[in-house]
Image (cartoon, helix red, strand yellow):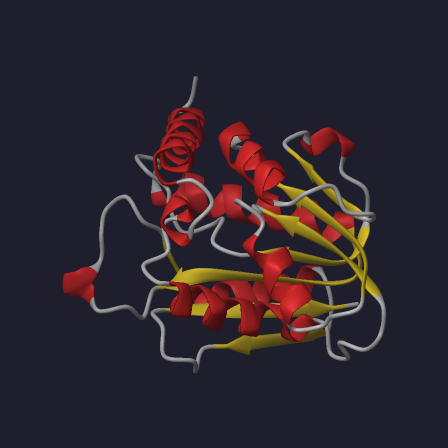
Length: 210
């Protein structure tokens, strides 16, 4: 088993425990406040340029389904919402707090995921545990390749930024170079790429449109 495999197993255990301890609240997905969570959602969902236009969403790393609540509160015209998370405990919380709704699916089976108009991946790249920088960077790029394959119209993701204050960085977190990720998306996926790095958090968001 590689260091990366160990890191991914540690991450799954970490979020399983968070979900069991905190339930369906922002602490379970390691946000420090609901306000920050909403700020991040507002950036990610900019990939959906016209909220009145109907669209389907694959929420990759959905946690307890907070993005679904956000989209419904903001009156986005959802045709289908698929929430995926590798933590079975997160999915259990999502199912418990979201009564059965037409067009809403929660799953931890990545092999069964369908395509969607937009793929949203919030917070899935930022914690690397004991994986090396190179291992985690390669893992991130492979994940983006996978997400792009799931998307019909575009994808959005975020990451902690390498421009964070050095004295506040933690060894278990991954601080991505936004320029490198912008270049990867621009050269491999699409000419229509936006980098957002101006919303007051130590992170960035990238939007990629087909």
